[in-house]
Image (cartoon, rainbow, N blue to C red; front, side):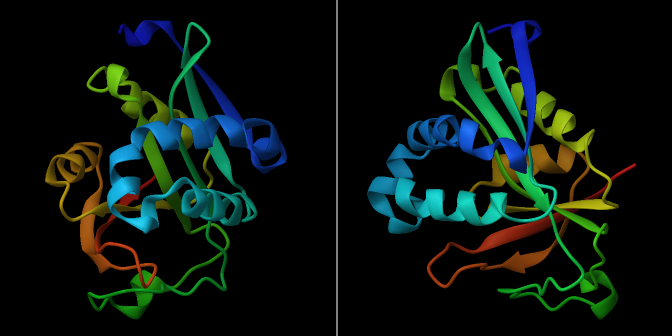
Length: 181
């Protein structure tokens, strides 16, 4: 699919109710196999996480469509000064963990439906989302058993900072940070 036909719409927390069902539909398709094997990836658990994320400050979402068909999205929220890094497995210097209301954007999801993977759409959605950010850096987690995905994020400028397990029943993730302009 030609990425030139991609239309990207940017949503904020005020819009989440209008777009939530579309985010869940894409997630259900992308994570179908994982959800069958691990309750952490079920649609119900994702919906809980999505609603929690969307209630946070400066939630934003870049939603992509090709000819009106949903192809993927990227979303996240701003961490606040009172954020505490839960689930750190790798020790990190205190100065790396200190937050302000504008230091770190938590990039929660970047997903593209299978027919459009490898077309550059994920990068386009990511960069559109980042273009709306005021934070100094972006932080994301990638499952440790997905080295190709981690390599993709590293090509986008993210650097490995350690390992996290953000929920007791979640997988372990590589923690990556990218400085924003």
